[in-house]
Amino acid sequence: MKKKKGIIFDMDGTVWDSSENVARAWTVKVQEAGFDKVVTQEDIKSVMGKPMDVIADTLFTYTKKGKQRNALREACENYENEYLSEHGGTLYPEVFETWEKLKKEGYHLYIVSNCQAGYIEAFLGYFKIAWGDPSCLIEDIECYGNNFLQKDENIKLLAERNELTAACYVGDIQSDYDATAKAGLPFIHAAYGFGTINVPVPEIKKFSDLPVVVKEVLK
Image (cartoon, rainbow, N blue to C red; front, top):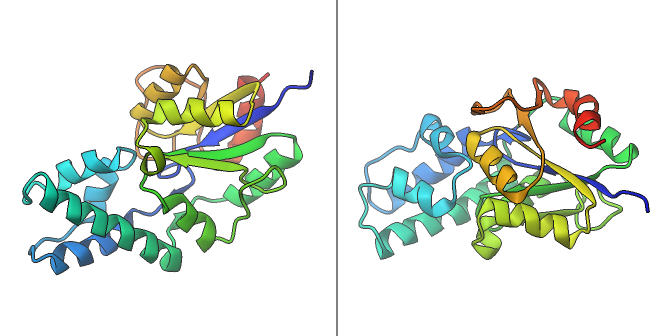
């Protein structure tokens, strides 16, 4: 039986950096809600990769926990998707070229993120990336905002849904590694991203390193 090898990607700090435009979008909604606050790019980078409710609890300490905080979070999420659909973010070098190469080599490509519903679609739409079936560059996606499952659960869910016989996850921060380990899959560290990993793992120093590294990880 031929193996179906899948590579599952994190978004922020792995495929692109949207922190500048996310900060701009969130600042609009925070100020519209009556708070004299600015959400900075550094704020966003500090919480990238965490579930949206955790991000809101970290950044919106000046709101009342519960209805007020949730309403602001939802407003920020919705406008963020709209803003990124129009303005995008900073794509890391050679992402598309590398994806095309991996696809030609027989790998199946996916995205799993802790983001809100619609965020991955905003990324794919902005860059006009076909997705949703085996003929597409990205075959399937999953995120926290769709089902409120933790990242390890969504990694497992996506791998099982697509009947992968071998798979790995590519991410940039410690929680990505922790989730991947919990899901029982090998991990590749995007070392150019937002974080470090506290154990030795295979790594890529630039996105285009992936075809070589993944051959060792998914033998």
